[in-house]
Length: 96
Length: 334
Image (tube, rainbow over all chains, first blue to last red; front, side, top):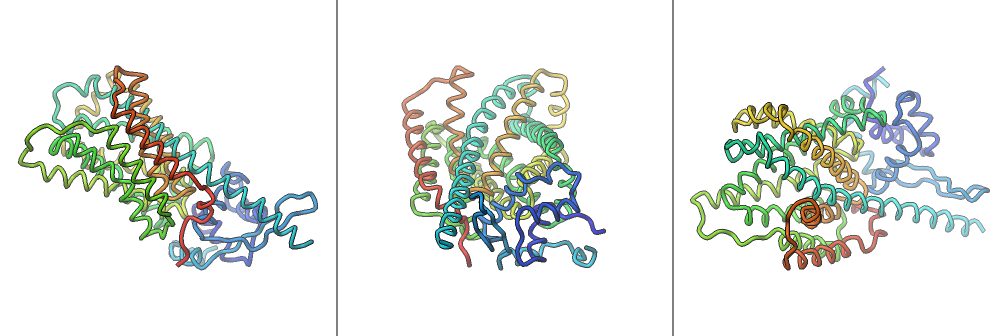
């Protein structure tokens, strides 16, 4: 098991490994790594996603309303976000 | 039908994004307000023992600054402990973005603050204040070039008004005649403005991948360590530093550190949410808040230039915050 990335960085890394991800899917993936930590919750992840979208590292892949009128969204990584993966610690990809 | 549903989804999402941007502006304004109050409390602490014991001109304020950042770092660590983010310190420091935050801490902490204090001594408080008040412009210009931040002409005007207002509020006519080291003092004030501007850009760059609450915890801890190891021994400030633990001023510094910690937390959050240019413009309203809290807590008198400066800052704030929809996308796509 590799040393863990900062959670925000890990979100971007997860995005690079998937076509698109919903907030719920991200939370489920993060719980495998950070499960017992109090930061691993919806409000914190939503905050990170909003900031990452505002600076252009991720963008919407899907945007729709469910039958109850609740917003459903999925995110995907942008070219700018992909360029930031250069900061992954050396050897991280091999260990995960 | 499907197109209508999509339009509805987009509208709801836009509302969420605007709400997020508005919260960012509120954090930026909060950072300015608390920084103003922090300055008043820190000012009171520096009029108490051991800071008044005839130490060198730099030793007392730099020892105070070290205590302030040490306490701020301590309170922020407690906050991150409570929110389950304390393990992120080590994880962040093992990555380059975390180290970039540390570099920002060096610029904004020891380099800028030492430059500012030395500039006051060498060039006088008026010139030091006027030059260092330019730091939002320095930060905004660097943010445009380094982060590709979008800043509209109206926001540039708002940043300029906030800077002008801060200068009017804090300005006192300089003393006649200048010391031989006057120009070195001006250069040091420029270094301070550059340091604070650089801190904003570097930390925002690092915070693309590091949690802002953790980044500010690292920033304050780094700043304290550098003061303690590299600055205080050079200026003879260690004696004052340790003496503080036996004096009542310790509690005032702990309070100032708490206010400063929350102010910085708000500042760093706002960088990620609304961008460097707007955050710095709203942060510099601390000049106005400092006067307000000074009037409330000390014997500071309200003068005509304070009222004029307040009006100009208010105008600048309105120009900066006028259209939060601009904040939905903070940076240009290359």
